[in-house]
Structure formats: C-alpha cells, structure tokens
Length: 308
Length: 163
Image (cartoon, rainbow over all chains, first blue to last red):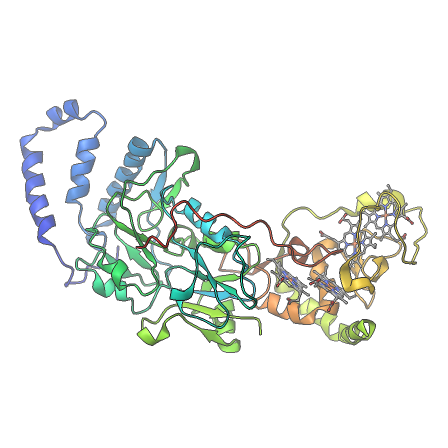
C-alpha cells in the first residue's frame, strides 16, 4: 500500500521459497499445471508463498492477491466472500473510549466481534470482558469466566479489553519480520500472509490482545461475514497471529466497529481523535480518563472513563 | 420533594427549548417505527381528555406507569387533545420522533452527555453529522429504568487459555 521502508526485512525463509517457487513454476509448464490442478489450488498456494510484503505490493499485485483470497475462501470454506483493501482514511486518527459506568459485562461485543471478524468457531475472539474486583485496575486480577450467576462483591465492575492500538506498540517492536505495523490512521495491523507465527508479538503485548491460530480456523459457511478486507476479517490461514483491528474493514468505510454497534448500553465510543468537535476530544478534555498499563509507555489509543 | 425537583427542571425550559432549536443539527436514529398519530386519533378525536390518575381500562390496561415513581402522569408528556403527540413543559408540541426534547425538560444532564457522546449511542457512522439513538430505544418511556438484555455466554475457548 504505502511506500516500502528501506528497512523492511526479507527473511531468508522467503528468499529460499522464492527461489524454489520460481524453479517449480518454470519446470511445470502451464498446461500441465492446469491438468494437475484444475481448481488452481496448487497455483494459488505457490503464489501465496511467493507473495511479497503487503507494503511492497503494487495496486495490481494487491488486486491479484485479493482475488486469490476470494478463491481460497470458496475452496476451503465453501463460501463466496468479497475481499477488499480500503486505504487508510486520510486526515483521520482513530481512537476508542469506554464508559465503564455503562458496561454491564453482557458480552454482546464479544459475540459480535467473533461474528464480524470470522473468528474460528474454536477461537475466543479478539475482545474480552473482565469482571474486576472492587478498587483494582490490574488486568491480572480480572476474571473472564464469569456468568450471570457468578457472585460478585459489591463495587465489582467490568473492564472490556481488546487491542489498545498503541501509538508505540510493543508488539510491533517484537516482530522479527515486520509482519505487523501501525497504519497512518492509527490501526495496528498484521499481514497474515507475511506472519511467520513466532508469537513474539503475543508475548510482548501487555494487554493479551493477540491470538494465535493453532489450527486452521473452523468457519461455517452459514455464519461467515462475506465482506472482508486484506488487513481485516478475511479468513486467516493456520499458524498466524490475529488481533482486533477496530474492524478496519468497516471503519475505513465509515462504519462503526462491530463491538460498538452491538453494545446495548452504549459504553463504547469510537471516532476520530483529530476531529476537534468529536466525542473523543470531548472525553479527553472533560472526563477523568485513564489508560491501561500507562507506565509501560506503549501510548495506548484507548481511554477508559466513568460517568462521575 | 420530587415535584420540586422537576419544577426546578421546568424552570430551565426556556433555555432548553431554545437549545432544542440549536440542537437540530443532532440527527436522531429511531430503532424502529414510533407509534403513528393516526393510531390514536381514531378514538381520541371524540374523547374528552381525563387528567386524573387512575388505573386505565382497555386499550391501555397493560400500560404500567413507573416513570417518576408516582409523580408523573400521562398528560405531563402527551398532548391532552391529541395524545399521539408529545409536549414539552412549555406546551410546545413534539412528534414522538423528537422525544429527546421532552426528556430534556427533566433530564438535562443526560441530554448534555447524550449530545456529547457519553450517554446513549452514536449510530451508523463515526463521521459526518451525528445520528444518535432515540432515548426511548433504551428507556421505555413509561417504565424507563434500563433493563439489561441477556448476557451472552463465554465463547467456547476462553481467552484465559492464552495466548
């Protein structure tokens, strides 16, 4: 998409694959290939292996990749999806705020996130809500496994956590192959086709916001969300990381993230930090706000506040 | 005591109704269709309004007035001759779709935070003119305490089994 930073690594694994790939393609003449591989599955797989980093691809290359992703979804999951690559919205820096007085821990955001983002049916999704004991703010004291009958001491509260879209993300620094970076509109993304699955980023993230696809995602054709994007909710391959992208496939088109849309109490506020009359600026200027683990200087772009 | 509270709130009406006009830049998102005026006039066109507080017979026998804990009654909010419309405390008629301007009479704090995005919910898009969710979409006007919908269960594999 954007220009390639000179520093972008070209890990030797890729270079080796590239060499091998060229050899295979040259040897197997195209007609032979068509006979042995009528659906183009092998060709698609090879081309995915040869594919370069997202930020090094030209528009035409990206278009080919998007079509390949669509074909693969149809072959592997039996669904027709549309995969797009909306560019960053110019002049916009996304931000999120959560009104903790309103969150009642109903997990509608959790469910909506899994649905919108085509999370594996075995996966937990990229939003979690923690039941917090009174007067404590450390994530480690939170409990994910509460239900409506869990006894909770008075003064307990709920803390929704997902990727905080840090301005100085520890995960990005940890990635050895630059498969993850922060986009100009403030969203931290992953090139799932470049990720080598080392999980350094998951270890580095102080918010447990990154999740590994241990298995090939299980998606049911009936429940898939067919409008997808390259950096967003397209079906992920096995062995790569994923995370919340503030529903990049929606928000870059002007829509709200699925978690915001699903929240029945209106606890989630999403918007543009650069809009001086926007909700986020109002909250930052008028409410007592805090961020998670601020002492780590990751500069999260997610703020929490209460009504009082 | 409560009466005094909303008399005080009523005193703010002049300022608020003025603001209501200035507030026309706020778009309202209705979660569904609001009752049509015509549905009411079929009967109310020939009925004399009755102001006394009482248990109502059909067709309103199922309506439970919980709002204001006994201090509020129908014609505080509905127009007497034409209950298919609302009215502010200053008597300005309002369609149901503009209910927030009625709520503003007595809940100025929530209206302010609704307009600034802290209460209620912005709908459709994060950019352009704000479309805010209609107050009655979350608060039934006659029994407005917010009722949480059912909690969704935890997904199959919990995030505890991390990363």
